[in-house]
Length: 195
Image (cartoon, rainbow, N blue to C red):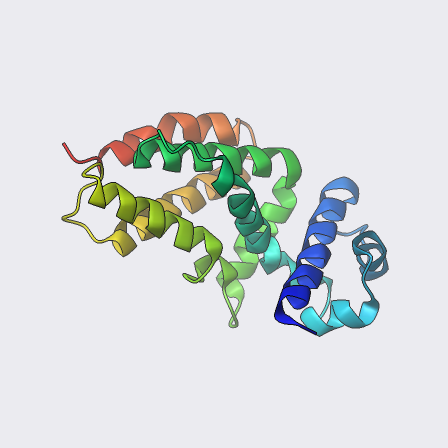
């Protein structure tokens, strides 16, 4: 299989799985359901994933897919801080409306105990590449402080997003993830704005 087709097949499986997890619940979704929804084969499924549990850590692929979808919609007139806030709002809106609380909590717990690959922490993900690119542009335009490295700002930004999602999980979604972040993220990012 070519690399592009390989990525598309894996993407189809991941997207189908998370759609079904949200609609039917994780426990009520079978590998057969995922294969049928994705229009792939059981062989393809098991080529990429050892089983349904292995899909838990693939939620980060869904986040990356959302970032890829959002990039062309970024208004170039926005400054770098506003771009980061836009991406956060859109991502958290997607999470709030399409990812069940239970699954997000499972993702965090699986990342805590896994000895293998920790997708959320993979700095080669689209998510981190986009963050670094926007932060670097912001530094070059004099919008973001340059006394702190791009990587350090991206790391702290990602840490804050994970912290907000984690809190939302342990509070059982008692508040709007998107709205809460819309109040907190500007305060945080203001500390990185070049004065």
